[in-house]
Length: 575
Image 1 (cartoon, helix red, strand yellow):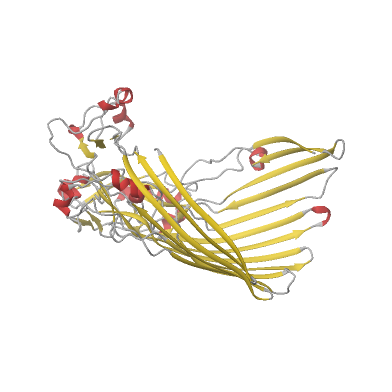
Image 2 (image 1 turned 45 degrees about the vertical axis):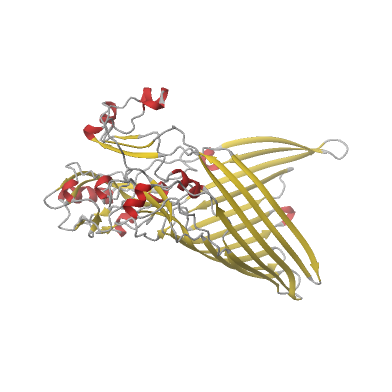
């Protein structure tokens, strides 16, 4: 990905009476010549290891290049910014910082014109990429030295933060205009026998548009005309007080809210479902029931508004995030240079999208209850609820200094999922449908499922039991489970020895994950990951329009993982 940048930046500092004023600008022009290897290599999907061994796939998908195997495209980006800040004492003990920043980003190249998309949807791929002119970001911070000796300090601040949008979606839209690639989806007998050795040695042999076919649907990425860059408002109030000569206490309250966050919607998905699953809270299904196979598979081609174009993914500003946190800390200064500190964090972060830079598929993997255009709020995939840090050092013992720390926190959230595209939205990796949690005590629950669910709930090694119990009889809450608490102890031992002319040599030994050194069963974590499969699809009942499932009895059982202990020895010479 050749990339060229030209940057013009400047900061000016002005002392104006009692104010320290900073004025600045930072401007970058970037040009990309880019090709992203994403879905061009092809994907064969198999039902089982036996099918893989027999080279018997049930589906093959690929975005096949229409010409060159590496169709490069260009994008030019202009990032502009202005900022100003002033620092002054509004009162003798009250320092004030006021700031204002403005950013704007312009993407200067449009995608090639796709006449087929214009004819079928009335959307021009060569429309200019929208510019968000609303990047004005005011900020303020107040610091009150209550007693005038820094022994008791109150801080408060807040403001808007936007910055520059990441560029990936905006050069992807130039590449995926529907002109460079053909979307291939083959099922069962349509699929050629895989020859992976040939594909590795000669990529031109990877199956492309089937022989005899004149055209194939084209995948398209778009930027919504209503696009707005993400904006985060942050606020915090912090209080710190030296209670005794040796004891300092502090508290920090934080709140942030993000709007206009990135997400992608499918625009070639039918507006209304063809039917609903009455036994799963009326979950919508976007393919006709008669097209669902006996094995319970859906075909993404059956969920489309038009079969003349392929998957259409549009970047929208529908994502959001809300975060609240409380941090409490204490620091104790002990005799002979020893110390003890502690920090506790309570955190609550909720969002409605799993999107990560820089591919649209990460948005499509967001767990949903039904319609992928109706996002569910839940715990953020990257959050934690509690965190505890304890750190300290001992007085010298025969010249040795010993210090250590413990850091522990709640596990990350995860969702209970169905292994299969049961809502037929075309998510071909089958990883975005939240599972319906069948209640074993409900008479309508199939007997074999009820029996298995009882075993799952009775299993003492099942770490997902509480999450399952809380969601019985309904579609699982997105990111409603959390991995168990985990922690780690690190230790440092050092000794400084004088040499000559005031010089010294220091010997240092670090032990990382001390608990694992003491016992191989300690110091690890049980990580259930972002998604756990509760239900596997085993068929579809055409008469009742219901899926036939098999419960995964190992949904909440995982092995301990983590970094093993490490010992690091070092030598430092001071002169």
